[in-house]
Length: 611
Image (cartoon, rainbow, N blue to C red; front, side, top):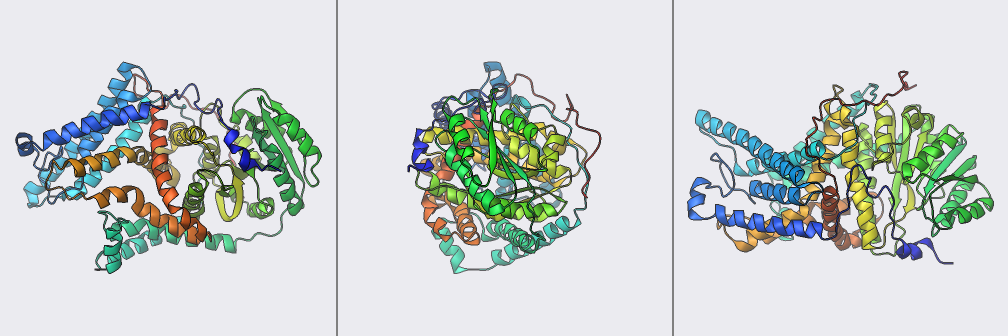
């Protein structure tokens, strides 16, 4: 029999969710290359100009730096960011006036912030006779530039309206104690190693694994997340999980899934047999034009352990299908499974006992690729790092923002209480998990709960998927901006969501940064620049490679290390897709005041309390 992964090349997936009409426009495959070409010209021209004798006398640091700093920088980060802002705005989705105002807004805001920073540095130099290092100035300017880009895109992009996020405070003492202790230990290790003259560190630099980053700076985050990961594993191992087999409903939104729906249902039937409790499968046939419905009905009728039915949802959109399934659900617990996911035999059995703890609201696991297609090996390392390491680690401090909708379990009452799954935007799964977390419930990511999830096998399908995924952080941050700008002091709202936005900006700028570093090194306008080719390579290979190895070993999948070359190349491709995704966001002429409440959706007055 032909397997599902053999048929993936038939797929050219497209749906109304690919580009929500109110918030995203089509992006030509040539739009990003043209933008990068313009960026390259702008950057090269500015690098040449600032290194001419006349201009170099005004800017001796060979960047738009307006006060004297000690030392030197690796790259002219301010020239890089201004070049990027101008090129990105020129090719963003919107009218000419909106694009011009967007570019000016980013550039002027960034320059104003840099001017304040340089003034403070000049004042410090005048008062105490000492200046900050140029390296520190470059790092600060870069982080500020990432933030300007992200938040100006939120302000000027057409985004989902703000809603009121109900936050129910619960004790976070253990989480903050854990976070504080692990930060102190990570800082201590970083400082200790940074002061050592180790042959290994020099070897890593020679192999381009560190580039220009000091070992102390590099070690901080891995040591921090490594500790949190071990604490999360301890929580999983010591969790009180007695046998618990309540009836569950499984909702499966399906749009043109004839190539895999039979395998999906059969996998759930096997999991139901292992589980031993009642399992009700609801296939939500969402406007399919193939024979998804017929195959699903035939396969459900042949199931031995599970029962199920097909419900037709003519209105297109995954959230419409999910909400119809939510309405049809008659059990206390709800499992959401994507139609291209093959659940593991023990998934229901392993997930449900967590709900004997009344503080648990969401349970998920780690997706693994089926193998055998173009991107599967790279995707394996990606999920081990993101879901099998970082997401698991964040669970130790109750900091999980979202759990993927490929396989996730809820208490049915929670999505209903929150008004169902949001429609008309990307990121409905993260949105619902985040809001359940803010109700005071814990999200569990069990690294041993694994299931097979489809990986696109063609470039066009991967591009469509990633543009949806990467756009979602902006949709979620806009809709849930109450957490960022509201009065509540939550870890997700004040730390994690802003970090995710800034990290999205960093990823969107990765390809331009590689181009810019190559210009600085290859053109050689600045003879005093310390940049070497190893630093350029390390941008895409250094820390990511080491973290991928660590994640593979911690998850017990050492074979993933052999996929390291594909993974590192895939990270660059993923960054390119991020850039394309950001270019798809529709730009408005006017900037929205993100702190001002325009409209708040109404949620029930009666709060949910953690038992």
